[in-house]
Length: 315
Image (cartoon, rainbow, N blue to C red; front, side, top):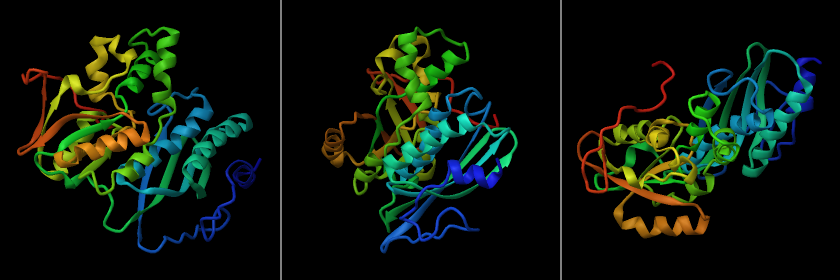
């Protein structure tokens, strides 16, 4: 099978939302009036971001999901994507499953694949995602103000717990692994939440490298510090069964793809209304303060020392 046959068979779909999609030197895209373009790229590398024997359907889902999550964090509506993929060989069964997972999530969020590239080499997947957000309404990292509440969506740490099991660092039962594995292999981008937070949240980020690391980006851009209540960080019942790992998984494990955001205290009830409307848990875990750094406290307000920060590819 040639490169072009591979693209035509597995990665060419109709793109009614683009002026021109797959098949030419460039795609042609038209942003709607009053909207600005939000663009992000993420690369997944075998052996670094996923195991080479990962189910290809789940891998197709995650390849797109981690990019859609970036748009969610900006309050942007997903529209288009390109996919650059390096393959060690042409495996028709693998490609069929991978593309099925990719396009299933694409259909869920209205994403059209409009271009990309294929080449022979170590398994490597790179998506560039394009979305639209009304001018002036994007959620950014630098908008937090002192006294804002810090919130997170969903629960944190399950993906890190599943990874620890696969790495042999902890032994989970079949039921425990089944409960936390979806968070690792098929994260759900919080697009609806990002859209609902426009005009409410003062800043936002998706949690990909760990809560402390990613909240740290908000604090750095906003030139603030934060005080977090450790017991308030939302954990799943499965993770609570492993207290020796819970804090590390939830605070520094990464791969959660939940949203961390700040909002003025005056918008507290509005945030709870969003949670109810979306049937998605949103938890206030602390507040921003003048100064620098993030302080963890217990329920009594005493400082809790924690060694760890988050994932960094070069440390």
